[in-house]
Length: 264
Image 1 (tube, rainbow, N blue to C red):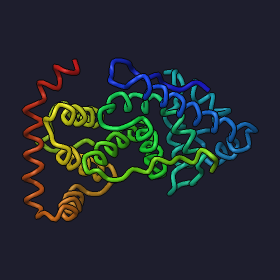
Image 2 (tube, rainbow, N blue to C red):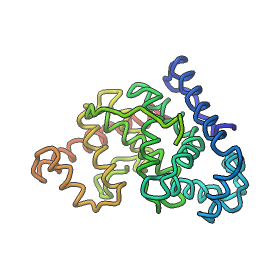
Image 3 (spheres, helix red, strand yellow):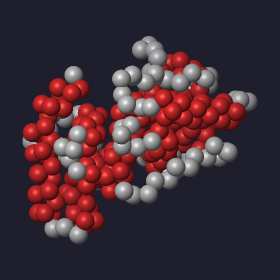
């Protein structure tokens, strides 16, 4: 099964790391193919979610992923709903999503090569797929990649232990405000955070703080509750958290021109 879409070049992923990532993703693809080989599971999924009805199998979704003529995003959302723990809780569907998002995994591994290992990226994506909400919506692919990047930045910044195990043997943006640095889209923000950490514009704990806020906002929690939760987790008053956030945002704003020049 081809991996889709291809990763971009020009980032600092070593030949060894790239080879490991390629083999890991190929192993995932082989496992998914074996699970879906007789067509029974796919038929069940098509019956369970109408967004898969127009696809005869996962290969059709992969092919459609390269086409602008076929509405494939709803299918990825449907597979995510079937594969997430709060939805259908079917690990083969979650692995199918991971296979479809191989391109986003490769880009993230390249972009965050100085932050984490390729295996960390695959594991983080797996965790995000499994933790996704069943109603994630048609922008599931973009959201999952974004959340994976935020998770990796957060965990690296706070040195939390990672779970790197996959079941291979079988079954963001900142809160909207005038304080946002440019560029302001969610995916650009996590790229900016990776650059800021790599160039020492931000310390790891500062990257971790922003990533915590991103992750909380993405969970659907209200902005005020996210702030209160993060403040409590650090033992800070809410005003202290706001002050720290302001300092980090000011640093990002001051460095925005350098970031744009470096990534032009």
